[in-house]
Length: 213
Image 1 (tube, rainbow, N blue to C red):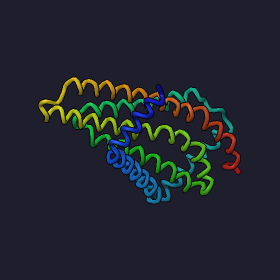
Image 2: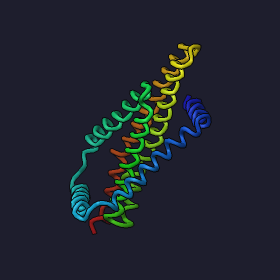
Image 3: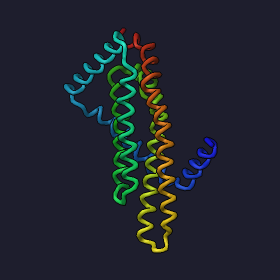
Image 4: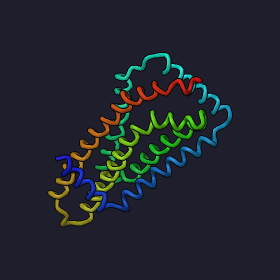
């Protein structure tokens, strides 16, 4: 079953290479913009954010984190993104907004990583490897795939309105497929959130002495 789904997903990527390329490029542009924005912060802004970040490290080091609450918050945040992407996918005007969401998600990733590295230097790479990258490697590909399927379905809606002989049954089948794909990637994102809530904190706690030296 899983191998069949993966085969269909790979076929979708192959058939929509340019679409995936444009989405990935949008994400990378967002990451770059986020990283460059760090350099544009004023000294006061950097000092305030640095104070907040170091306070978080100290709090994390000496107090136990509620992984259950972290999981709940992260899951809700990601489900909001999934629901938004799905909703935009079933509307004709949703395509540009999907690209905007991908760009914003990239900006957040780039800004977070860039700022951490700016604050604690090369140690920031280690922090990012433990706190950000594990869950991003799971969540980001899902967001990119959901965006591609959403855009593709929106294009099919447009096609159905412009081509009279376009099968309504075909559009209905595409909608059911779109919903199934959304549920599939939501399930994978669920594991990404589990990594963020239960694995990353353990890794961070192991390396936290490095940041408090």
